[in-house]
Image (spheres, rainbow, N blue to C red):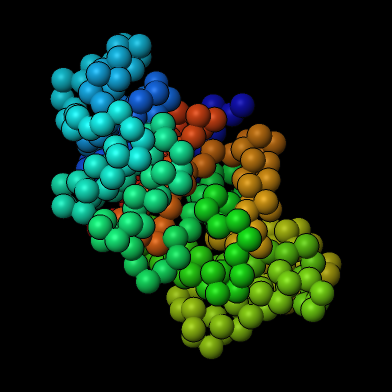
Length: 305
């Protein structure tokens, strides 16, 4: 695997996050060494100030296993239950004591269920979605993917929210007018292939200003989305082809496979956050590298003022 020094775009992301000061993050149910280690790594790197929410006894036991000190880290003792601890962490965010939320060792739906509850008051008018930010050695700039985590088989209505979430997020982290490729298996509109119909509708909605602030084109197949030469060979005239900032996938299957291909075969590193709530939600998994966990915290920090 590439060493951290082979990901200069990720270096720059983390450095920019440090420059904005630490982000106060409620870490929900960090009751495994993976989950606790992710939060403490980002703390050690100067990116977040974690508030650990969960059963103190289990959190301290994980810290002991990691040989990590907790002297300067706030712990909010909560029930040894992932749902109740998630609710307690969300309550801290709702009360303004934390500016972001981070997943611990519970299931993702247990955390997001707490986020979307009426009591939390963190919902917006939009559907929640996820965005990955990649540093790929073979690509000339950062590249984002949405949605490879939350929405399984979104229809056009859901895709409008997914795209709007990602575009707004891109603006917040420094993209003035992100170039968005709406992916399908082909680059021509085919009434028998719903992903091409959705892509064409999203492109026209962007043309008409219904989705603002981005240059959107689709449907595009992956080859002509990423490769200007491929687009030229197929005589595709596009301001996006060969230079996208964001790839929007038709469903979770495609997004998940693409994400894992970028990591395991493309030598990439990534960061990811859930969008669509009033605060960014940081999701990490056991398979994530230490670098990816820190980068996800950095991405959340950059998305906030």
